[in-house]
Length: 210
Image 1 (cartoon, helix red, strand yellow):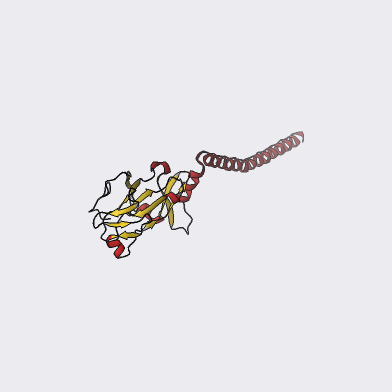
Image 2: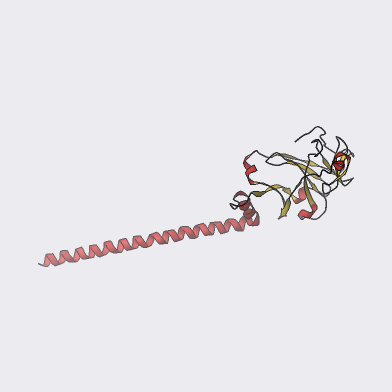
């Protein structure tokens, strides 16, 4: 009789111990999930703090909203171009673009991105800071600083240079491009051009057709 009560007591303690262990185990799962989530949040916050706005811009560029068809492609830092300088740039779609700095300021109003392909016959145009114009050496076509034709065949046909949107954020210059173009082809190197030219355009390529 005594043994039976003792066995019952031991069995009861064992059952209670199992329940307590199970309860403890169940409590551990939410705690682990909480700690894991908290660690992830802390890590994300740390990365945002380390990379700042540029990381946010990169995320916006790489992971656009579903309804966005365009993104911003990094071109160069603002201080990479001095006033009057220009660089040739090839977009992921293969479009030939000339990016020129026309002012000393650091906002996008001081920069301009235009197609470097003349709408007349497809020759390459370039920025001439000394003449404050874009010039095509093939048939002496000229465009003002906004890409509007001012002389030559382009003026006769009222053909302007295609303009590309630009923006500046945190000292970085971006060009707007179609998002689907990012998987078309890698970027080609850009070519920096200095403002002191010979009047016929430094680094011009009269036969270059995009």
